[in-house]
Length: 622
Image 1: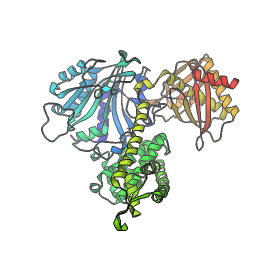
Image 2: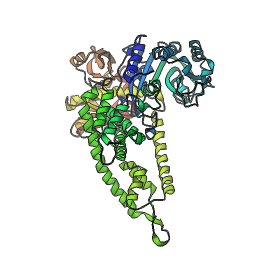
Image 3: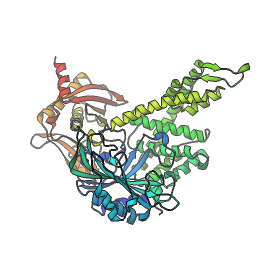
């Protein structure tokens, strides 16, 4: 069938709204107070507090289109399927319906709403193991709906369990995945998951168990459903396209690249796909407040823009520009995300600024490369001293240039060749690749550790620290003035980090006073609760925070958390999505570890609560 991206989004939302779901807005690409990931990587991340048991103001049936970014496969971008920014269609049951309805509605949407023939579909279910039984209920439900048994694969935890492998404590469970046959020949009677012509288009996760710290699997008292359908991949499949880049989400951008580079897509497929993906991702990141930097989300943005520069220069070194490309990205997404139009100039300026910085950085990289050339040891000169001359360039130093200045191996080799120097290709590439693998392994391990616990990362300790940021925010405004506004927050299980607008270093007395105010509110045992208000009501009530924060917006209202009540008095009101503790007394104590500069006009506080704060405060008294 032929379907546009806007049609697919609309059909999905309307289908589930007609079945009692409430549409909620996409959360920001930058997770709120979530240290487990740099970006929102799946539709479930903004809903973690509710999946953990906090009641959602819109009820127990939800549907959305969530913006997502995944960075683990950046080097794979340019093939038919890998993307950095993508959209996830999702529907949710928070302790409401479970496997029977979730599977039924998945089947009905695919076969009735989208008109996919049943004989082009296959599914997989959890096979069972020593921890949890075979998912007989899901298997039987698919058979009842008309999927023949030969089209149902029974797979293990690495394929049909969330999180994959099920090794980490916390809520988890089996999933069932749906596949579409993309081959041009007859659909096989038996489903072979290893056959790449079967493309996964949807996944229903059933949060059925809790894995205890000792490894035991226990049934959850409240079971949830979390589903995800990748918009881009499904769009490509339904339109009979081999690549996601051949859909209406990407072709206008590719055509803009052709115009800006005066080159043909057919001759530069991979390079133009990389530019398309990276600039598209950059536009969405900048729109959600990410700024280029040397760490965290800013580093990813910087890497995407700089790689785009390299690839576009490779297409046509003398004739290239990003202006038309940025406009094309905004045009393809503005109907769904109207703020892109409002922020167009800001986005364009941010990309132009990073491109200009990269030009200077490239000059620095070239100077470092010259040093490598000068210190290189000649290891082989053929008889007569004729070319080729092989120069043993230190692969570790070459990798450092790649990592620091954005010079890929190919560019390093090109620059050496311009200087009439060649490297021992096999030896140099082998050494360079070893450093690259080592770096990627370290990054991958760090990423896995960051999100190892899945939902379990949202611990009671994290809730306490999140609550402490509310008290800290208000205390800062009381001591420094109303110009103070939150500019960023990062929570781990051990400490909080809070960035705020202020143009000078806090004095020791100001730090002490802020600390005292927060501890007074902890000692007072203030109640923490939320109400849903319109923006006008929230402003009238004195709430602080980002009024345009879509994470806290539901049905035209914002979620406002209040510390205090009429009996003890209200200390603060702040727009926030949660989660929080019920009473400030559970924080025990609060202590500021450090106050420092974060960026121009922005200061940063690192603080601890509980026993760590008690101990730190005690050292000051002595």
